[in-house]
Length: 101
Image (tube, rainbow, N blue to C red; front, side, top):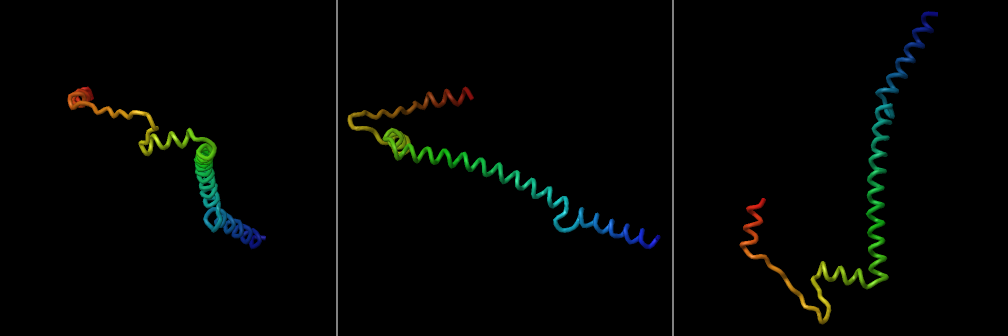
């Protein structure tokens, strides 16, 4: 009877060791679960970014307003008949701003 009990206890210890320290153990499972959560959050961010990019491309394909806005802001283009004014601050204004900071 003692031999059977000793063998069962040995099996229990071996199984517990494998459960906590072996390959595919509980800590490995928890680490993978955390990694999956982190990856899902990253995927959600990328999905939002893709939605914005799709909306932007749809806007560029369908209308001229988005194209015009991009041309004005990114390329500095102006329409025919418009006058472009560039306001350059005086050095005195820049000095006053620096003193206020």
